[in-house]
Image 1 (spheres, rainbow, N blue to C red):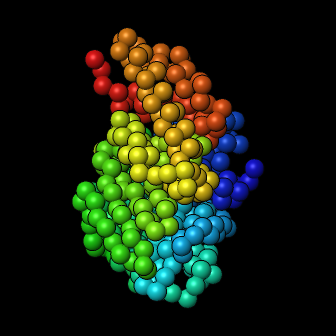
Image 2 (image 1 turned 90 degrees about the vertical axis):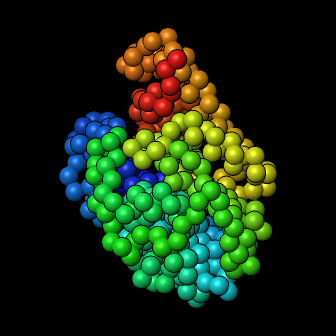
Length: 324
């Protein structure tokens, strides 16, 4: 599998780092190992994004999905201009502009960030220059106003230019009326990060989950900026309570067209693995023994075949389970 295909299929920035080190190491590395061993990571991500094709998935009611630049990007096109959910990676700009032009001549007017991570916000600056007002949760804005180190990646992200920082913020929730569509923005605290929001398109019956949901992939949980396994489970359960079998569910990563039953499978995976890890941790077992017990084994064939390995995901869950 080529690096470009991996990026296109998954749309996840860490995959290019893992792929680039595979041949040299003989196997996949954890995100921490990849970051520790690789130099010029941001440049490498941008270089890969500059070559990755953008796949366009048209859904309904003017909502499309752009796959191939960081996280999955949703686009609402209408008389009020284009509304983007997440901004992808800057090096994808020519291909993103081409894909956006193919959706209509309407200008880019709004950008909503589901959270602060680079693979969802790197495009903020150029999209703002194109005319997009940027909206995000107040914690996302806070992180984009400062230098942030993600401990589990062993990488420090510099403060972006002011033009990349959201000018508008949402607290717990907000309703917007754009392009004859009702958008509901809902904050899910202490989940993937402390600033995650889901975005629901009311009339279209579509919800973009951001990185609260990774379709067919173990998720990353960023404890450095307020994430946690319990908050992730709660967020997924909250989204599940509001969707139907007909709802199109857009994950942050993985195949961009999903549905309630697949999101429910994701919840089952999270809950069961958390329960397995919690039991072992309550018994007083240290992290290495918990990993050796393979608490994710029942789910590895489906969820553990990409960058976040079963061992690394076990560590993330262990970190978020309180000792009793």
